[in-house]
Length: 405
Image (cartoon, rainbow, N blue to C red):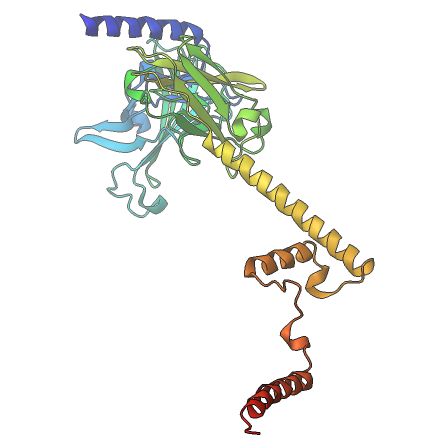
């Protein structure tokens, strides 16, 4: 029962967040998407791997052919299927030129009789995609689309196909080249301006633990467009129970580049424990583009105490010590100059405080004269004469009283 309540509350929280995230650009459910020349996204996930067949005309020596959209291109024959290449979404689904709205490239087909062409890439195919009807004005019988024409170059092992499909309405404009990750060269959170799966909505498995009090994110962008990135903001759901602070170069709106990423430190502390994660919705405004949204989940299994900032105390102590050293040095220099130029003292006695230090050392050593002159001030000859006379005076009485008269 308790587990059901947790799941239900988490589901409700996700619904609220999705409503708040309306209009944000999230990652399509497949790799079958591309951008037009103005940067708007087109998502073809619904027709990914859709098969389009073409019946060739024998008199024109055109082969039968079929396209598995965003998958591969194959020629049909009595001997079976001959592969003309596999789809590579990140490199070969681009805006087209001329009549084509988009172009898909297929490489690494069967190598038979094509080993010495285009660096052994094998058979290749190029699919020119037209949104709507064929370039010759023909209308497709199928609502999804159809193959308009096929041209085959046997010596080059390459086939060129014209495909007409219904492209639908374009999506929002994407700030391409913008990434967010947990490393300066990573893009787990945002890739090419699109929020990745796991961070487009709050997910329990992607939430951070209670003991993780700091998470660092790194922003990169194409240098020519980096000036469009603005200062990020955040909201917390629920609003009470989690303390969040943003710091780092990205928090002040510094423009990120691929060579100099900016960092965003998310510092958070659990003020109230709860069963479901807190959701931190971070929004990065982009000038001229829709803002980039992503979520960070935070688990709060217990309340975290406020930690004293010992570092700040040591910094204050160090600053005071530096000030004291500087003042002491200035005082000593000023006193030394005064004694040498005004009091005409030299050597150690010109240093401030040396007179007091000498007196303290003398008292500590116990050296006192008690009113007597030091022994080295007594004239040596006088001491010798007095000693001799004293010795004689002591012997005369002895001779006198010892004489028999």
